[in-house]
Length: 141
Length: 143
Image 1: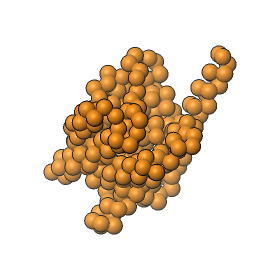
Image 2 (image 1 turned 90 degrees about the horizontal axis):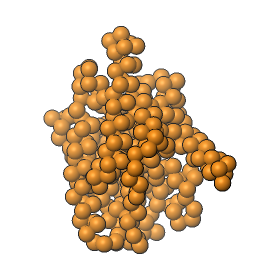
Image 3 (image 1 turned 180 degrees about the vertical axis):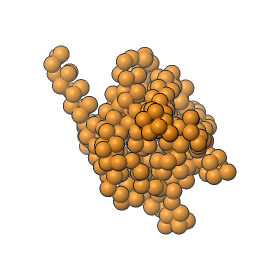
Image 4 (image 1 turned 60 degrees about the vertical axis):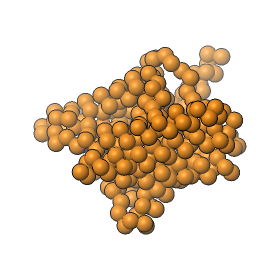
C-alpha cells in the first residue's frame, strides 16, 4: 500500500499545487524552468515568484516534518562523483530539453502536449537504460 | 505580492506532495527505473495522482479565460520535435538515472542538510547556467 496510496495522495497534492499556480498566476509549474529563470531570465517582478516557489519546495517537507513528525527524505546513496556528473547532466539536459519531470511529465502531459509526452518518454527511457547499465551490466548484479 | 504568495503556496504543496509520495528518497526513483530489478512502482502512482488532478484543474482554470491574478496564461507554444527536445531529455534521463534526483525532489531534499544533495543542486544550477550562456553566445555569433 505504501507504494500505491501514499504516492497517489502525494501526486494529488503536488497536482493541486500546479493547478493553483496556473489558476491564479497562469504559470506552468515546471521546476527546472522556474529555477533556471532565477539564474538568468528573471528581471524585476518576475524574480520574486520564482524564488517563492523554490522556497516552498524546501518548506513543504519541513512543514510536513513539524506537523506529522514524518518525512520520507533520504540522503543520496550515490558517490560525490556520480552526484556531480548526474547533477550536471540534469541541469544541462533540462535546460536544452526545456523541462523536467514536473514541467513535461506533469504539466505538459496534463495539457496533452505532444512535445512533453515525447520528452517524458525519452527521459524515462534513457534513465531506465542508465539504471540497467549501472546496476546490472557494470555492477554485475 | 499576490504572485509571490501563490508561488509560495504552490511550491509548498509541491514539496509536501513530493515528500509524501516518496520522491525525496532516491531509492524510490532508482527502484522505479530499475525494471530488471526489484521494481518499485511509486513514481508512476505519483505521476497518475498528479496528472489526474492537474488535467482536471487545468481544464477548469482555462475555462475562466484568464488567470485570477494575472493577465494571461503563459503556456509553451512550441509544437515541433527538435534535436534539442530529444537530446536534452536524453541527457536529463541519464543524469536522473545516475543520481536518482530530478530538479523538484532535489530542492525538497535540501532540508536533509546533506552535503551530497547540496553538491547536486549547485552543479545542476551550474549546468543550467552553462546552457544559457552557451545559447546567448550562439545568438550573438549568428546575429
